[in-house]
Amino acid sequence: MTSQPGLTSTTMSPIPNGTLLFNEIPEGYPEPGKTTVYDTTQTIDLGNIPLNGGILIKTLVLSVDPYLRGKMRDPAIKSYSAPFLIGQPLTNHGVGLVLRSENPDIKVGEHITGVISFQQYSVITALKLSTVSVIAKTEESIPWSAYIGVLGMPGRTAFYAWREYSKAKKGEVAFVSAGAGAVGSMVVQLAKLDGLKVIASAGSDEKVKFMEQLGADVAFNYKKVDTVSVLKKEGPIDIYWDNVGGATLDAAFGSANVHARFVECGMITTYNSKEGYPFKNIFEIVSKRITINGFIVWDWTDKWEDEFYRVVPKKIASGEFKYSEDITNGLEHAGEAIRRIQTGQNIAKSVVLVAEDKQ
Ligand SMILES: NC(=O)c1ccc[n+]([C@@H]2O[C@H](COP(=O)([O-])OP(=O)(O)OC[C@H]3O[C@@H](n4cnc5c(N)ncnc54)[C@H](OP(=O)(O)O)[C@@H]3O)[C@@H](O)[C@H]2O)c1
Image 1 (tube, rainbow, N blue to C red):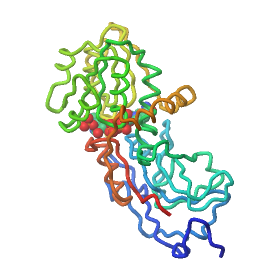
Image 2 (image 1 turned 180 degrees about the vertical axis):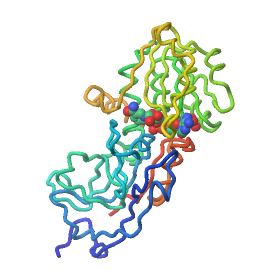
Image 3 (image 1 turned 45 degrees about the vertical axis):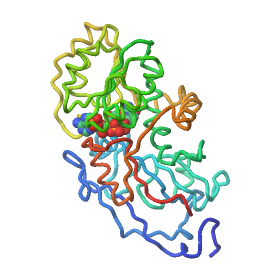
Image 4 (image 1 turned 135 degrees about the vertical axis):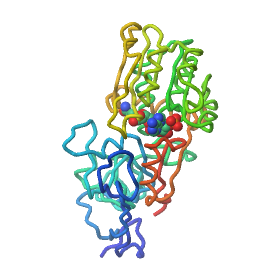
């Protein structure tokens, strides 16, 4: 056996490879230990596992996002994102450290990002290498977790769709639901940058404080204060960034200005239930001539990615843009993090720290 760069002799025999498996399609909220199971029986021989022209990575961080719930479905149901398969590891955006490589363009010690497995170690074969890309830190002070949060899919979601759909004009009023979350917190800051009055809602007083720090002019806890009355007082609203759907969306219809733009980013209130919401104000779409755009982040990569990377990393590094993370330590607790984001208990961008950044 030849020694591999990046691996010591102690890693040349099979070691445990903790893996979070998809175990059962949930009826309502996902349950750790039932919907997902942390499997400690799998092992991996880091020095000898075949790479088939690919790479071996150690997983450093994994993102936990609301859309994972949609992947926990009957595979016969079609949707925009492929379903998880029973007995297979979950997958999502993450960052990994390259331990071995058979690809000339990817070096041992480099970092990759893309959709990877909820496993401590995994092989990305040559066939799958197009799904990951090598990344380098733009600033040493920014942790890898930020590259799957504010500088990753959620940050890009906010930036692309704000640029594409908000048609923001200085002095207008924007309302952002789940304004303290991964996407919402970036939207609040983009709206402030464009000179808007920003109303932002979230589900705890701690989140309200964070939204105030982000610059929201009116930040409120919708569990304590009635959304309809806040919007009546502070609106009418020209832009509604919807992360939640349901009653909040209905309230936004009811307080929309003429020619308002509604950016339909997500509807998390509906993800764990089969019930539809009985909208009362839906005719406002007609009477207020509301433009409604739904989107999936990747629709806009080609158009907005370059600008995102030109603008956002600098603002993060300088502290002009703020972000906050809800960190779960250890892959064995990832199932709980998945449950917490579906029940709204995460207090900021949810990330799982799997391992330290060392070989
Ligand atoms: N279209 C796209 O391409 C795209 C991409 C990324 C994300 N999204 C969507 O954007 C939205 C925000 O995603 P994110 O990653 O930024 O998540 P997040 O806001 O960090 O976390 C989700 C938050 O939703 C809020 N929420 C409101 N009502 C809820 C309910 N009934 N049950 C559970 N949570 C509730 C909770 O905050 P409160 O305490 O404030 O209630 C919870 O913390 C989600 O709907 C997601 O699906 C869409």
